[in-house]
Image (cartoon, rainbow, N blue to C red):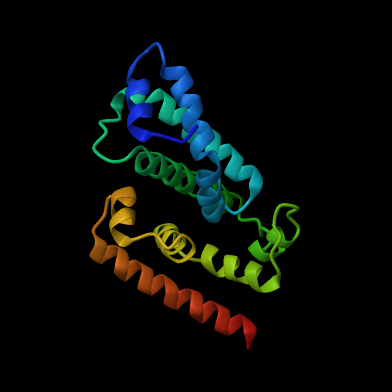
Length: 182
């Protein structure tokens, strides 16, 4: 059965069909949200945890969804915010312990779910070195080829600010790669 957002939204508002409709939402959006989250948090385990938190938060806040934006935009916003929250919590803990963590590229190359080569791992390391918001904008624009208007809805910011953020992030990634390959 093909996904019909309007029908799904109608079923989500009906208490009798809500659970079944939400199960369809989870089935339809799990894979794209997983990969979006994975670009931000990098590891499979973290992406799974964030994905689960995303759907739990969506389920608990279904009555607050005003249907101003598309369901996919709302879910992406939750997923990205949950991803950024995880990174902030991890950064705070790491700052407190001040322990050297393995590099992103070595983590990725050791991850059984990562099927890229050294250059792809280095690109991910460069992207991971970006500040959280720049990394998110870069991933949405570069990897997903998402339009600035859509990113603007997800991140609730202006297109001009997004373009500036993307340009700065792209320059930082380019510089990082240039330095590491010299």
